[in-house]
Image (cartoon, rainbow, N blue to C red; front, side, top):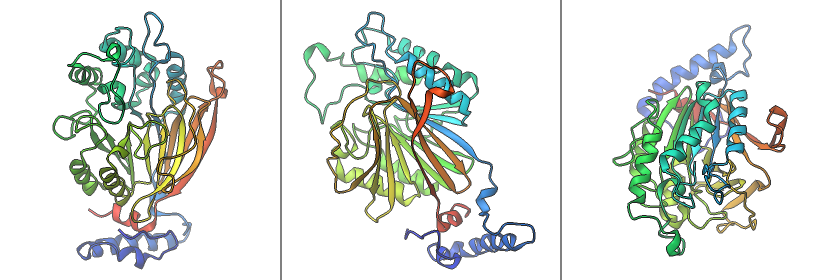
Length: 378
């Protein structure tokens, strides 16, 4: 798809649409244009602006830094509870969780996986009790040891051979909610999924079942091809482009580029992930020049890490903002064709109230005219 700027006229927007659908698109455009010219209506108001605004949150890497304590909870209870309380104050429609909910298989002091996830759900409990839906995907702590990019584990840290199977079952058992779609590819039901919410299409990706550091691209292509949301939001645990951890989707650069191009072609402007324990906002072009932002928000409770400031693929990436001093989470506000994404930092953890939080990074983008018209086609 050829990108069209917001200043391009309606005719240019129509030219990228298949001929068989142009008549329907023309009708939609004529209706939009005629309504904007009617007395009493502001011609600057976009057709999508009539949609009620709504919000969603994104959190990741809530595992505990109390892993060396006897009776560890395997989560950072204090930070998770503070995030949960602030999410309830913000009252988003749903929460996306980009993996590493608990310590899982790693340094868990023998705490049962079911108990770890039960503790996580208890800490995030205010969100559930407020009726806010929670959509989690797995991280490496939730799936088993990394076997490709990193050195072999020392013998004393090597888990039992059946760990990946047991972990997968524990994760599915912990999140049986009927609203979590089971439309993922074979073997990934409830782990990889997609759903439509209002004017958005959301995709959650498991990156460990179809081989570590991979997504099921065939399934994803079909989902994106069939999507009709004005906005497309994609999330998974691992960054697509390496910042700190070596184990990420760029281990397979060709497959990663196919992934990046596919979400860009579908209209996604942002990819949410975690894994690295800091906040990092980078602008990365796909192979056709479309701007996509990689948002690493591994700030849900894990021990915060320093970073060299150098991307391995630095020529493709442009850092927009970085912070490794605070825990926090993402809040996305959708208003018609406009999206504002903010990272809320817990700057006063000793103050469990609204004034403990501060927005330290925020950006806004709008969907161009061609994408707006295409999203209205049947």
